[in-house]
Length: 86
Image 1 (cartoon, rainbow, N blue to C red):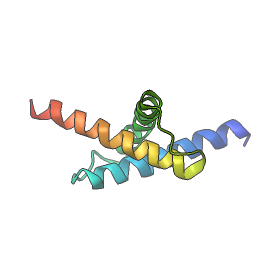
Image 2 (image 1 turned 30 degrees about the vertical axis):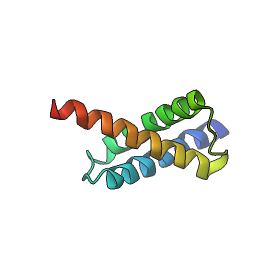
Image 3 (image 1 turned 30 degrees about the horizontal axis):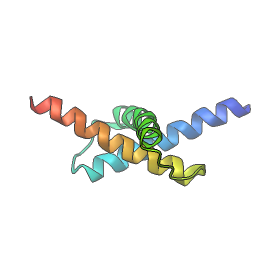
Image 4 (image 1 turned 90 degrees about the vertical axis):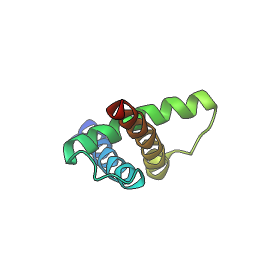
């Protein structure tokens, strides 16, 4: 496996953990493993954009990426649940 494959696997793992943690934080059972992973990955993008816009950095590395993805996933889940109630 080359370096690119490792990056994809790590992104999927971070996304999965972030989606799972965001589901717990938002007092939900989640949407299932695959959707939780997608929410975590998209949450990482949302979190990165949000923190860049606010000029905030949680640091680099695995922990910073995980925190960014979890916070982004929580924001994303909040928005999704707003639309589901409407």
